[in-house]
Amino acid sequence: MNNPTENPMNDTQNPTSDSAAAAPAPFDGARNRERIRRAMTAYFVLGPQDVEPLGRTVLDAVKQALAGGITFLQLRAKPGDAGDILELARQISAILPQGEPGIDRPYFVIDDRVDVAWAARQEGLKVDGVHVGQTDLPVRHVRALLGDDAVIGLSTGSVAEAQAAAPLADIIDYVGIGPYHDTISKADAPDGLGAERFAAVSRAARPLPNCAIGGVTPEDAPQIAANGGDGLCVISFICRAPSIEHAAYELRSAWENAR
Ligand SMILES: Cc1ncc(COP(=O)(O)OP(=O)(O)O)c(N)n1
Ligand SMILES: Cc1nc(C(=O)O)sc1CCOP(=O)(O)O
Ligand SMILES: [Mg+2]
Image 1: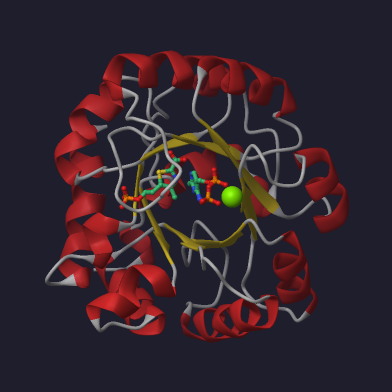
Image 2: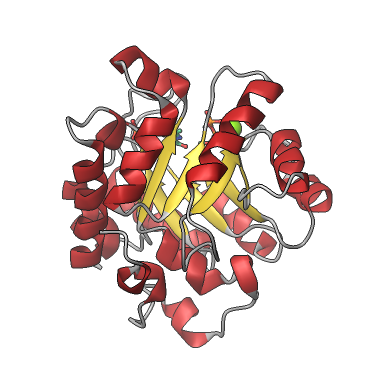
């Protein structure tokens, strides 16, 4: 299921956005924009708070999601002490395949904790970067701290936030756009954007790759694809599924069939 030759990040289909088709990818290596855009396909976010109440562990959930073919992974431990998050990152890193992110294995980022991402990268873990929100450390500081090679994602929930993000396309690598629907996984999230507002935000964020987050399921794939989305990002759909492997596979297949 997770054969790299079947990886959506290897395929040669045209990217979904006009601007992406017009311009060559601006960065090499892990920060190659089109590689990151393709890796938005099946983006899985989780932390202990999402799985442990269901009798699952983060590590088992990640193992099964890898088998199902996720293309991007975020460790979002809330609350979490830095040392504990780093230890989880070590364990996840150890079960990720070797090789290039977006080609041989999913990208792997840490939510919020630039300090933990920095430490993980110092240790040589397969941690590609960090995902920050609007009230986290400003992205210019994140870039200065993590260096040129790190992958940086930023949350955007409005046209104004996306318009502010787009000119930072040399600093950040993608945006999460949400919540697409109402979500049960983020206490302070506003109401869902819906397809029309999502379309406006994704347009404003160009040329940055994006993923839709917030109550997303595979059923949303055609609508998100039609409205400028580059992929699907979920917590509940995978964490709460009877089979995590099957849910991850469904998510990825839905996007591959929709785009
Ligand atoms: C891919 C992705 N998009 C959005 C978020 C939300 O980040 P943030 O706004 O910082 O909120 P918290 O996740 O920190 O509660 C995300 N984590 N990932
Ligand atoms: C972590 C997060 N960020 C959001 C945003 O809108 O920025 S929504 C969200 C939670 C997504 O979880 P679920 O798939 O269970 O709805
Ligand atoms: Mg945050």
